[in-house]
Image 1 (cartoon, rainbow, N blue to C red):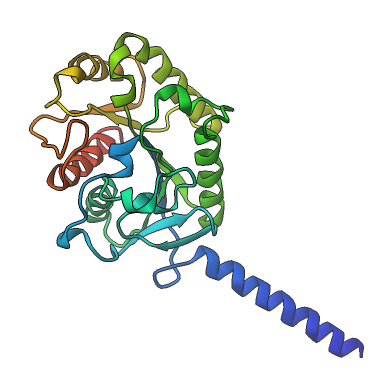
Image 2 (cartoon, rainbow, N blue to C red; image 1 turned 90 degrees about the vertical axis):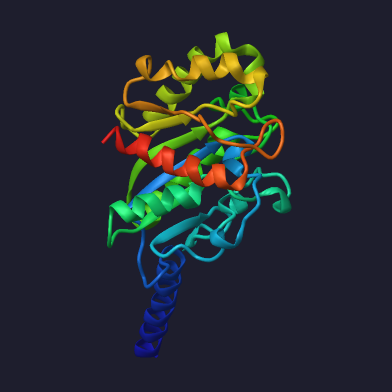
Length: 261
């Protein structure tokens, strides 16, 4: 009886261990070498159409399933697992796929992991630590990222933030709020030099001019940060980049991140 009980205990442990491993492994048993956190509002969620060239799994890229706490092969839309996203049909192409492809091209044989926790229509004030209403955006993103890092044993390579349309009418107050957000995030992950990349919003909209002028000046204020310019990018409406521009935006985010290495 004792032997049988020991066997059952071992079997139970083996099943649990296998389950745990399967939850954190994907794409041939790999886990990420590096993880990036994507946060912000609707252009980071993605509102552009997912076209034929954007479809399918990206080899070497993993997406963190926030609800099920596991890595999965990455494919658009990257914001599908955000706990506070708008309806799934609104989650389309964001800068994530082209950023991942650019990183993979520069790091052959490596694996990239993406945590995407975005909510469209949000202001920077809604991303304050500890804020619960209307959504706990900051706390949810931090929790998901820490779970993803623990699952794969990877390092956090950087944070990509694209937001500003919601604050475009109050650009003068933005620098202090952005600096505070970056400082809080870096404290959260224990890395005062954690790369932080942000970007201009659409240059086609004259209402965004003051914000875009302000945001490019912030790397001088925030160490280990970079700003992506949106010159030449095009749109589908007053606020949102089109598919071609989302692809280019992702490549520019990668170049900006690389400049911090």
